[in-house]
Length: 449
Image (tube, rainbow, N blue to C red; front, side, top):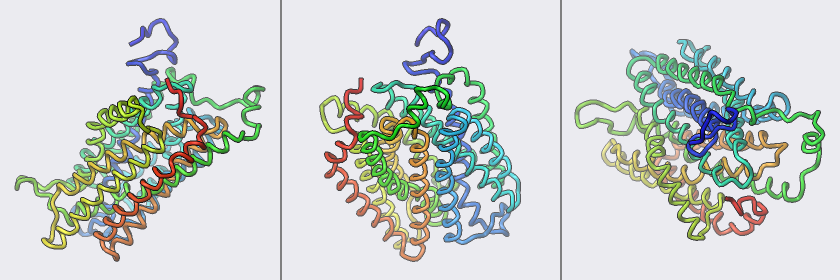
């Protein structure tokens, strides 16, 4: 740990990384706490009977999954205008501040008990995530210089913040929401967002050098903004767009967690815990984050050793491998469906095994893809391209909702097995095409030290 008394705040380091990384870490932790707390309750609240003691909206599964798909898509698609605001008007740092404020309002409104406030709260959350999500990720990349090998590890640390929040939220907000009152659970999510915003405001002194608006008054900055993209930059944008297609596919399958798999846990899974109590369905939303917290170091160390042995370790390869591993997790959900058809319920361990494979796949693909974008995106379009990444995530979420809706007619076994087979084949196809795809990056990942 560096001596922090002899350097300006924004140059200080802790555990080998800029202190600013940990400010962004805790900001994102609490932002994700609020989001995943709300996400764990979303579909369960919508389908809860209006006559129940803890009443919901009484919707059908199809209706709940349809709204879930639209909501989660818009949450991430709004990253495109959020990136534009950062690049053109406010800079990343101020746009994150704006996003945090909108999220505080949204989650607070959501805690109120009416249909109008539910939709209004969702609107504010959509706008808030759009401003915060792409820009805080870009700021993490901005903490490191080009060819700095600490960048990938920095994103893994940042990713841990996401998943600590994602682990705690379903347990705390989910338990309170399901067992006591849905809106109390939403209220706890609001408290988490207020804490995250407070951390970000306090930590501004550590972030002075990142996330600032590029001034058009400066000659060098004007040249960066006005010049056309070079051939290398155009090629890199092409490979980024290809990677976005993989991201859509990845999240289209992975985000069954908050929709179809969440309802499956509620309606078709035996959640009795040795006869002592029944585990709330929302608690299973924390399993993915638990595995990330416990396995992130293991997966990161594996890829480090793999690379040191001279084996293929490019970001595209990791994303493809992650897609395959995640797809295999749906094989366990296929087994769960067979068990339900035979016995009328399925065991909890099928869900846990599926989430285990989903987590390993996510650890291979998701943090690496964030780092990949910061390496390849042209500087003047950095936030917009990060916005496109989150928009791709949003489209994946919408496709996830559509898949969930189709499953109600086609059958869950057919959906789970179809994902297992088709998504695995796509992953292997990317690996087969890896050499020409890597040529388009023009060595962006070579020579990292």
